[in-house]
Amino acid sequence: MMNEKVHKLLNQQINKEFYSAYLYLDFSNYFKARGLDGFANWYLIQAQEERDHAMLFYQYLQNENQAVALDAIAKPDKVFTCDMDVLKAGLEHEEYVTSLINDIYAEAYEVKDFRTMQFLDWFVKEQGEEETNANDLITKMELFGSDPKSLYMLNQELGTRVYSAPSLVL
Ligand code: MG
Image 1 (cartoon, protein in one colour):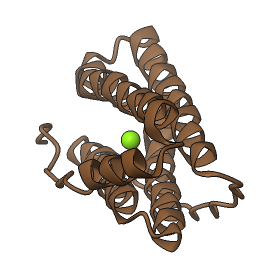
Image 2 (cartoon, rainbow, N blue to C red):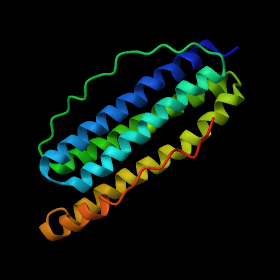
Image 3 (cartoon, rainbow, N blue to C red):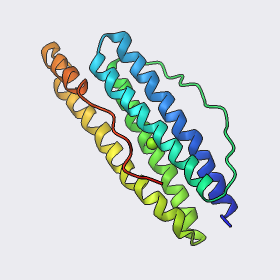
């Protein structure tokens, strides 16, 4: 039987990941309106990945014969005054998600729920990559964002990102 608190946190994470997808859709929409299709593409794919994360938590609970309760997804309500604001909000959000994953892991560790710890290992690594990607994007924007030609090329580069399904299979 799964520990009640671990169960609750895993169930909450479904909602947090769907919110992440919603947030990145909002970012994508911002860049689409700006005419930066490459940035819009990058965040659209980010949103697809977050939906996959949500489904992994959903599926894990089902596989473990644990109840799933879906909650309302919060409204992304950040107002951005410049492109860099969006990128920084992305990094901030990933750092927050990392703290959530760590919290679940700590709880699973506490009650010796080794199966959940093993499931979460993939997310621990994934969060490292998410933070790196968000940081890299900020660095590139700092370097090239103020020059229109360079921004055009960065936009082209981000437009080449393609979706691939998560490497974790349950
Ligand atoms: Mg995620």
